[in-house]
Image 1 (cartoon, rainbow, N blue to C red):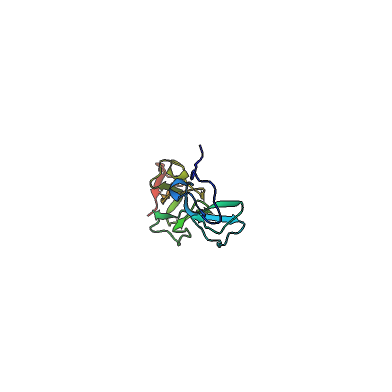
Image 2 (image 1 turned 60 degrees about the vertical axis):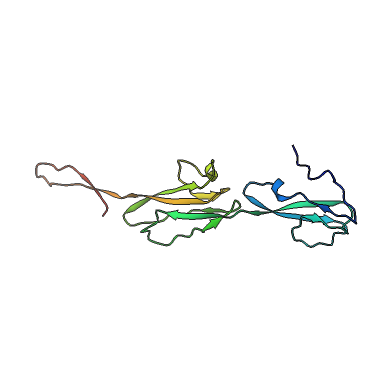
Length: 173
């Protein structure tokens, strides 16, 4: 079910030709920027255009120009971490990177939870799993660092004395 941009699908050297407008052209996670024209006699440059100008002649190829949409990354749950994180504040569908493993005194890092804003499929982020890598994702996203407080076992050795004392669990802090 293709898109027919016009009933006039020819152009002449004296008339030119208006190209389809951006409201009809879509590509997920990209913004339409216009067209690049390749034609004999085309006097335009490499910039994006919306028409084949008069004065152009010969067979023409017009190629859609797309820019990836930038999305914001917001961090949560990072108060008290030991070192600054190297995570960009924005990304696009073409970006791929591993998420760092933050450290926090007295805590074990469990992983990153991701929630993308405004997308039914959550921007390709797993719903119940931790995220370790950004790749083919989209949508403004909040990354939450999840930590678990460290627990320690205290064992008692009465060294032959009685009664024996059961081990206890203590939390850090």
